[in-house]
Length: 328
Image (cartoon, rainbow, N blue to C red):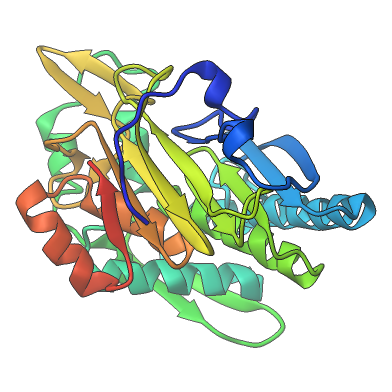
């Protein structure tokens, strides 16, 4: 998985890649025998999910993609904070300390989020929904008051989330009134991982799932080589600033150039630093991480975004030794 800076034209892009990552094609003359590609693009989690299966069996490919899309929708239905009837939506609307019944899948997702919160000592926090709403970077044009921001700084609100495993239906509690769940830092990664699992269950070995800036590459591309993934420039979306080759690996990108507002010479983006309660002040505009799972890549890219570059690789090695920073 080597990063490389190359120049690509729009003709080099496979018709795939609406987010920060794109799949790059190779010149036909350099390619081996190409197998059939079956592609689908659907709206998912506020972005677009793009699925590609490499198989000469069209019916198998279509059935596998149907199942993968079903998994993406199930993850979104359970974990979105924007629907009052989702597991997360119901938990966020309950009174502090009240038990809320959730599916075992939701409890497992929350356990994974808490594992990352503990691993990163709160640099990743799945309970910052109120802080995210306070900043509301899609609508604001100036920062909220300092007093309101300080309410969330360094609180480690994830500690207020309790999970009770009960079997058929589990339960969760939020003990702090300031804590509300937002799984934006791992939701897409989890969705990609579940979609990949569905493809494998249908016998697919070579495929790709891309959800915005979260991507998993299975096996090989249609020419038998590793998938070549381009990382878009944060300043010029038409340009690819780096490329990596992936086989059975995930990649995720966090950036400050998709959701933000500028005020008094500073950019306020959507990635809230749990230590300060405000958008982080990174030395980079985007950060890309590879990992064995998309959830891990997603969580790591989120947790590291506010870190100093000199510390980032050391921190990541302690959290997930099999992960790596490939662009930032």
